Image 1 (cartoon, rainbow, N blue to C red):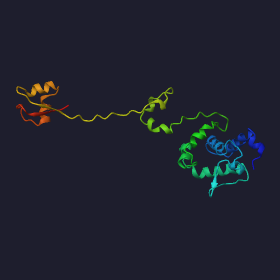
Image 2 (spheres, one colour; image 1 turned 45 degrees about the vertical axis):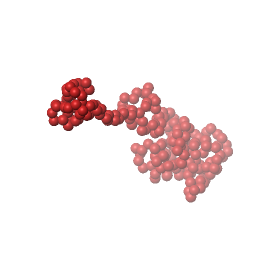
Image 3 (cartoon, helix red, strand yellow; image 1 turned 180 degrees about the vertical axis):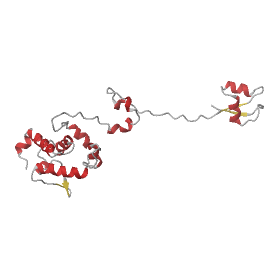
Image 4 (cartoon, helix red, strand yellow; image 1 turned 90 degrees about the vertical axis):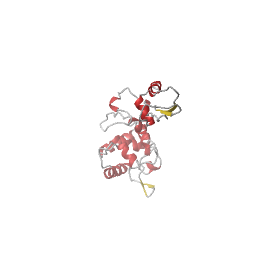
Length: 212
């Protein structure tokens, strides 16, 4: 069982991360983030009391391990079985398999701000764009500069022009197709086509459709 001294010691997290690296667990910084979240920052909660750093359950109950290292070993075996596509983003993998029921689990992981490699190098976290993926798809990302803030961009919504209903005009004495077409800024041919006229002759009282 984890000693009280280890739990309150700042070095305990270092021991956990060192062992995760020693076991060659993939994406060690994310796995460390999980350990921090699942134990509440290595606080003596139910999982910590059972030496279970990752909240693993069996039959609905939290598994008890003889030592916290056993829980890391268990995670390693679990990861080898479940994570089979090295090209899949590990955060997306955890989300896909529903590692946790909390919808904000991934955000909570990143919120631990633990971004370190096994050799002590800092990792620059990628911006969270899951929530705005549908917006990003509307843009040519090759034109986005480092100074751009994607979330501030508004998606382009194309306007759909509804077809306008044609006007109507009642022919008066002395009217010609040419005069009517000219006043409405359309061609005689278009006016004749809209009204299915075979000749240029029109009579007073005839109702004409004026296309727009």
